[in-house]
Length: 277
Image 1 (cartoon, one colour):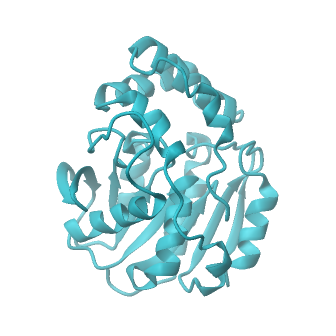
Image 2: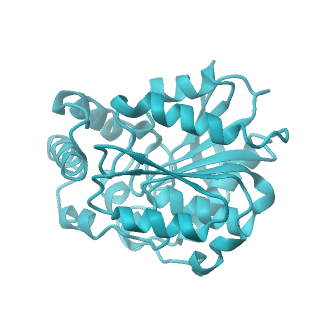
């Protein structure tokens, strides 16, 4: 069962979609900077749900159908973005969840793991780092005419290709995805640039040793944005964490070629914690 809805969170509205049975342990997918929930592939979410998880994905503020503040320095910080993730769980009456965060989403998940450890069942960090935001590469396209559909679609395809690897989807697939993203987004300029400009809250990188949730780190061997050495450093900081390499993967959402590996690893890590969600 798949359900999409708008929910009030922290004085704004976020678009949320769920997969699977509400009675299963919750698994919250936290997207990267400038990314709507569309980047978590529908079939990827369905396969996670088939593993006995109630999968939740959502549009960050300033992306997709969620509240948009318009282009410019946004009136929020990464702390607010982390609180949005918790607000999604609250709106769905979910006390705890397995958190899966990618890139900036991994940074938000780290903050939650440090500051709200009672909300986690497990933690999975994909293409993530202890230092954020590592997004200078994305700022190259900051002046692109994102309000023009054709220009925006080509920009998204180009940016995805530039940070991907040999398993990144073909351009035709990426173009369809980019068109979907554009058509669902209230203000594409805000979506592509505001997260890069948002303020940073108090760092938690010096508190990663406090993380008690079972932690899985998935990292592409070809990541050009977050060097693999940073994944190793993060693994050394988080007690008991496991680092699993994704061979041939760049800085990207898991390509289909590694879905089986990624899904098996996520479900295995989630299975290490048995408390009810």
